[in-house]
Image (spheres, rainbow, N blue to C red):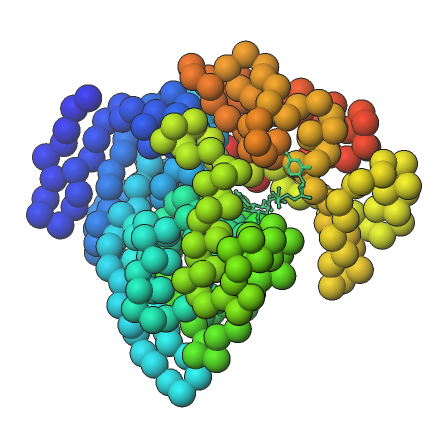
Length: 347
Ligand code: EPU
C-alpha cells in the first residue's frame, strides 16, 4: 500500500486498497484507489472526478466480486443535529457517514421517536435511502424528509425531496437510474421528519409477539426498539461474528392469481397482500422449503436461523457467493417457478 501526498482540503488517496475488512461479507478484493470523505468540500477534488467510481458506506449491502479497477469513495461525513422543529414534527439531519444504529439510538435518547422499528440495521445514514431500508413494518421512506447529494456530473449539491427519491420496496431512484452503481451521486446528508403525534407501529407479526411476551400492551418507542433489537439478535447473524449482508434476496412480489395457485400447491406459503393488489411472498420460506436453510456450497451458505441471509463461513470470495446464489435461485425456481432477485449491490 502506498500513500499520495494530499493537499489540506483533499483526503489521502490510498492505492491498491484492501477492501476485505470494508464489506460485511468479508469478501476479498482490492480497489485501485480509495479515499475516505469526511467533509462535503473534499468531493470537489479533481482526482475524484475520474470514473469508474463507487460510493461506499458501511459495506453492509455489497457483494465484492473481485478487484475494482477504479476509485472507491468511502463516505464518512459525520454530524447530527435538530435542523428545525414545528408544531407537528422534529426535522433531524445527519451526515451520510453516521452509523445508522447509533443514529437511531441517539434520536430516541433525545426524545424524537419514529425510527425505532429500524433499530440495529447495519450500515450508514447515507446508504439508508438508496435501498429504502425497512424492517418490522416500517420503511425509511416513511420518515425521510429530504436528502442532499453531490452530483459528480455537475459539481453541484442537489436537494432531493422524498417524492424525488421514487421510493419502492428496497428501491429508490438511486438504484433505478443506476446512479449508485455508477457513482454519479454521493449522498452527503439526510433529513428525517419525525412526527410529534407518535403512533406505535407494531402490527408486524414477530414484533407483536415479542411485545406481548414482554407484557408491553401499550409499548413506548423504547419498548419497540428493545423488542426489535432482541428479535434481530435472535434471528440475524452479527456480521462481526458471521460475515453477511442481511437479507440476500428481495421478497418476491407476484400477482394475486399466481399467489393463489402457489398457496394451493404449497400449504403454509406465507402471503402478504399489498395495497396495490399484488402479493408479497416470503423468500426465506421458499429458500427453506427448497432445502437451503443451514445448507452450504463450499464456504458460502444460507443462515441456519434465517434462510434469507447468505453467510460467509470463512474464506469465501465473490465467485463462491455467485455459485451459491445461482444454486439457491435454481432450486427455488425449479420448485416454485419464482426467480429470486438479489438485494445487495454487486461490485
Ligand atoms: N421464514 C421461513 N424460514 C426462514 C425465514 C423466514 O419460513 O428461514 C418465514 C417466516 O416464518 C415468516 C416469513 O418468512 O413467515 C417472513 O420472515 P421474517 O419476518 O424473518 O422476515 P423476512 O421477510 O425474511 C424481511 C426483511 C428484513 C427485515 C425483516 C423484518 C426483506 C428482503 N427482508 O425479512 O430485512 O429485517 O423482514 O421486518 O424484505 C434486510 O433487508 O437486510 C433485512 C434483514
